[in-house]
Amino acid sequence: MQPPVYFVRHGQSEWNVRRLTQGQTSHPALTALGCAQAEGAAEAIAADLTRLGLSVDRLVTSDLVRALETARIVGERVGLDPQLDARLREQHLGELEGRSYEDSWAQAELHDWSDPELPLAGGESVGQLRRRLAAVLADLADPASGAATVLVSHGDAIRAAVAHLLGQSLTQAPWIEVSNGSVARYDGQLTWLPTPR
Picture 1 (cartoon, one colour):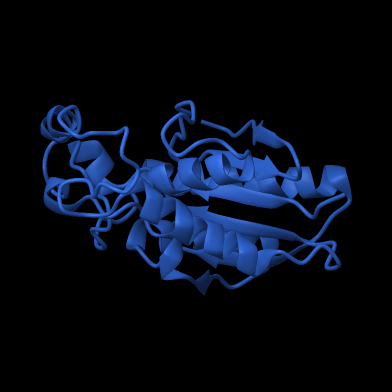
Picture 2 (picture 1 turned 60 degrees about the vertical axis):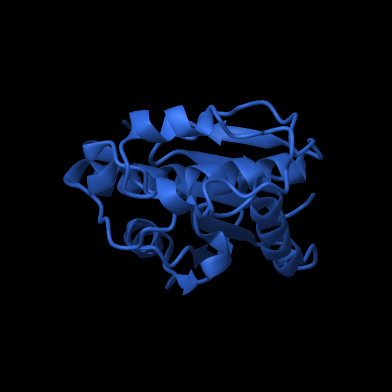
């Protein structure tokens, strides 16, 4: 069996509440609810590891504040210090960062999503995003370890990683909802774990 990789989306951030597009904006921190969501994610992972009889030996996180704060909470539960990897950052959304969700969505509707190499609003293309997440996953591949890895990241980044693992097209991958504090386990199959809300 392939050692599982757990994907955790950061908990709710201050900018999630304000409905501002974050992308790679570094500073928005977790809210109290975001901290609770991170605790829920940590408990879900710990329970799943116990059920599967597995240990976890790596906790790797995006270096953006909202992800790092989430990873520290998860790390306290699983007994690991987070390692930073900037490749786990959210998609760079260029001129959309700091704008309202509604404004960003309106601009995104004008984007040619059929071209996976076209940068979004002067930021990063979906092709670039997927390649950097694929590189992270390739670096982590060690079937002999037998231990799980936890990756703390962001919604679009997790969608890109999942599409890569499932062999889905850059432009045809179905949309998956990645809620704040949600956890997915990939071990050859993708399973979304129940987390307290």
